[in-house]
Image (cartoon, rainbow, N blue to C red; front, side):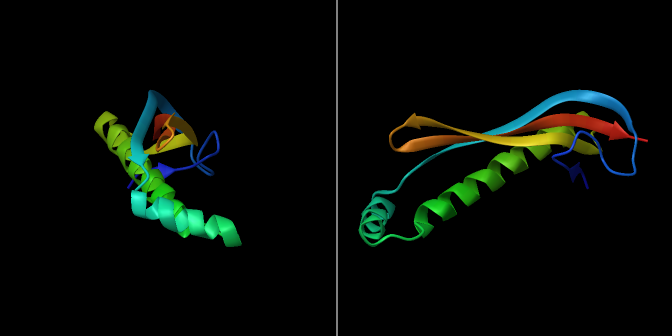
Length: 105
C-alpha cells in the first residue's frame, strides 16, 4: 500500500529515490438538478451538499489516478501531495492531485 503524505518526507523513513512527479485529475460538470437545489439553498443559506458531494468524489478520483501513476512507477509513497482546482467552464471544474513519487529505505 502506498503511503500518501502532504509533508516532504515520511516520518520515520528515509527517501531512497525520487521517481518523479505523479498526478491525477478529473473534470466534473454540474448537473442541472443540482443547480436547481443549489439555487434554492442559496436563498436560505447553508451548505450546498450537492456541490460538496460532487467535489468530494472528484478529489477521490483524482487521488486514485495519482496513486495508480505512482504504483506504475514502483513507488512506496507519494510525498508533498497537493490538490488544485480550476474552472474549465462555468459549469465544469478540474480537480488535480499531484506529488512526488518516492521509494523508501
